[in-house]
Every structure is written in structure tokens, then in C-alpha cells.
Amino acid sequence: MPNASTSSNRNCRAAVVTANNRPLEIQHVPIPELEPGALLVRILASTLCGTDVHRWHGPLGAKDTLPFITGHEPCGVIEAINGDRNDILGDPVQPGDRIVWSYVSCGSCYYCSVALQPCICPQRASWGHNPSDRFPYLLGSVAEYMYVPPECLLVKVPPEVTSASAAAAACAYRTVMHGFDRLGAITSTETVLVQGSGPLGNFAAAVAKDHGAKAVFVIGAPAARLEVAKHMGADAVLNIESVTDPKQRTAWVRERTAGRGADIVIQVANSAAVAEGLTMLRAGGRFVNIGVGGKANIAVDTLPEQMTFLTVRSGEPRHWLQAIDFLATRKDRFPFEEMISAEYRLEDINDAMAAMANFTVVKPVITFD
Image (cartoon, rainbow, N blue to C red):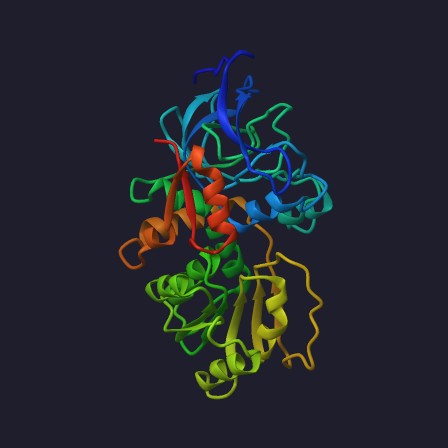
């Protein structure tokens, strides 16, 4: 396979956060030499998510180092590879293939090798917050090119999946697939309540419906997102901007579940919603907390008896594959394209970030072709 020989005077344009809460800058960032096994990918689409907005407003952890290229949801075409590489299924990849790729865990710590929980590996590497002034520079997806480290597992994107949807699969959708992995089977008698009508919530509604739930309910806002939720499998929706009393929202759920509460609650909005979600869960039910952003003191009067509480962080490499396969095989059942509600060019990144921060779009995408 060809070796991507790059020189120090080669660079590409990227959207760089240079200061929190200040407009992003379009900068020229070096294209690095490729390590053995590394790839250079030309980005076709980069979707944005709430984490990008949070990191723009302020660091989420010690690894968030200014300046950095925003974005961690890429889909692109392989431009060059240093050596031979296979995808996650063992098939060779080559320049011209359209791919998404996984995060990287160390593989040897307790969480990776004993607990088999690589998502909480302390050395785990992810994208969209890495210093853009140090090698390998291009570890954010709102850029013309992105560097793919040798340790990443690669997933080819089939023709049935758009680049924008594949990009969303690289974060939001694969995290949902991880959540359903942890949740386990859904029976035909079970009702599912989804807290949140953003990209994770609406995708979760589709997966719950596909997995055989008796009924799927979505609580969220604004109205435009809830309309998408209906198309993605929700049997009923509730707008929290119209029903502001949490007790009334709980009553709404119980009215639709024979007074018991939902069999399964999937929280994909904010940690502050957990306490309310627990009031909507039946005794013995299952609660999946995927939306872990935000800080909250989760105070509840009583917990549902014999409940199961699961938390989910990110995804393992197989979840990237599961998300892409779901998009490819369910495209005739769910209008995934409605999840991508606005398209922007690189130069308009600040408009895209503002729209995401203000909840005026479901999922914005930055395109480069």
C-alpha cells in the first residue's frame, strides 16, 4: 500500500478552538508524516454533538488542551496508508475506501485486560480535544484531513449509508448501540421511555422500536426535534417546554403504562434528568443512563424496588460497526436523513456551533465536498 509521504510545508484548513467561548478560527494546520500503520483520511462529513459545544465553552477534563481542532464525528475517504491495513472484519482497506474508525484504548491496563471494559481505560484516546500545535496535529474532525493512528480499528461505510449519517455513527449512534448492548433484550410486552429528543434520543427511539418494544415514548424539546422522534419510532411524545411540571410529566408516563411506569427508561439528555426519570420507571425496571453530561445532585425520595441502573460511556469498536450496519439495514424503515437537520461549510463553523448550542438543529454536519 502507498506510503503517505508528507512534508512539513504541507497543511490543511481546520476549525480551531483557540480560547473558550470565543469564535473558532480557520487555521492552516500541518499534515504530519504517517507512522507505520497510520492513515491520512480526507474528511467528507463531520457532524457535531453536544460535547463539542461543552468543550468550546470550557475544558471537560485534563486532556482538553488549547488550541485544538473541534469535532470527533468523522467520515472520510482514505487518502494514504503507511503499510498494509485491514478493517474490523479482516478485509483489506485501500485509498479510496470510505471509513469511520474507533477510539484507542491501551489494551494492557486492568480495565482493558481484566475487567474487559476498555471504555473506561485511563489512557483511552479520543478526538476533538487534542493539541493542534503538536504531532499528529490533525485529531479533530472539522478539518479537511484527519490523522488516523495505527491502533484504530477501521469500519468501511457501505454505499447505502450517507457520509453524514456515518459521521454521526462515529459518536452518537455507536454510544446508543453500546447502551442497548448493556441493556439486553427488550420483550414485546415492555414499554421504553426515552428522556431527550436530540440525536441520541431519536436514534434510541428507532433502536428500541426495532428491538421489539411494545411502545416507545420520548420526552424532550423543542417541537421540531419531537417531530423527528415520531418519524424515528416514537408512539407518543411530550414537550417539556409545554409541560413544565415534573409531576405532570411523570403522570403522563404512568397514564400510558397502566400506572406502573415504563419498563425501561433511557436517559440521553443530561444527568440532571436522572432523578425525574427514576420517578417514571416501574418497580423492577431497567434504567440506562447514556446522557452523562452536566453536573447534578441526584436526589430522590425512593428508588424503584429491584431496579437495574446502568451507565454507558462511549463505545467499543464493535459498536461503530453495529451503528453502521443498523443505518445500512434499516434505511427503509427509519428516515435517518431527518436526523441531519442542517448542513454547513467549514467557514461557517461558528454558525453551526451556535445552532447546536441553542438547540435550533437536531444534528448539524460540516461538509467538505
